[in-house]
Length: 127
Ligand SMILES: Cc1cc2nc3c(=O)[nH]c(=O)nc-3n(C[C@H](O)[C@H](O)[C@H](O)COP(=O)(O)O)c2cc1C
Image 1 (cartoon, rainbow, N blue to C red):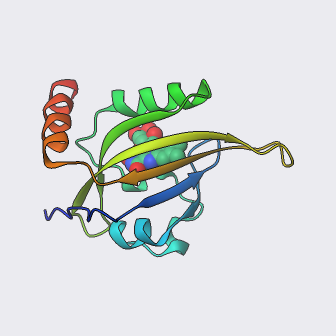
Image 2 (cartoon, rainbow, N blue to C red):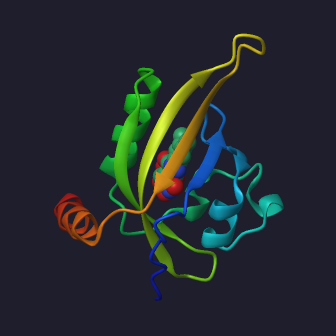
């Protein structure tokens, strides 16, 4: 299926609750993934999961943010129409002192062609 190659100024942001349920996604995220905001809010973030992504990558993501550390990594995501796109993601654990709620925010930018190739190679060995 077709690959969407991110533009250098594409910047995809999403926010989840402690369990990975989507609370917010910005316009770039919605447009590139092919969903309206209403289709995303309340859904599990695995809605964009690509079947080739190794479980180990998400295990590492969750283990890291649950330790209140920042996770960085390459992610291949699916679009609603069955295409895909690669991102370099940074996931931040956040704590709101007023509501006492923990949330996670992911900010994603364009990875280089070489970075994609290296991640692809690594992920094939993990699957
Ligand atoms: C803030 C945040 C952003 C995430 N972004 C993605 C993402 O873009 N793509 C993805 O497949 N999983 C993402 N995840 C991980 C998913 O929550 C989930 O663990 C993953 O899709 C694997 O799904 P599964 O455990 O149901 O197999 C994100 C998690 C958090 C906390």
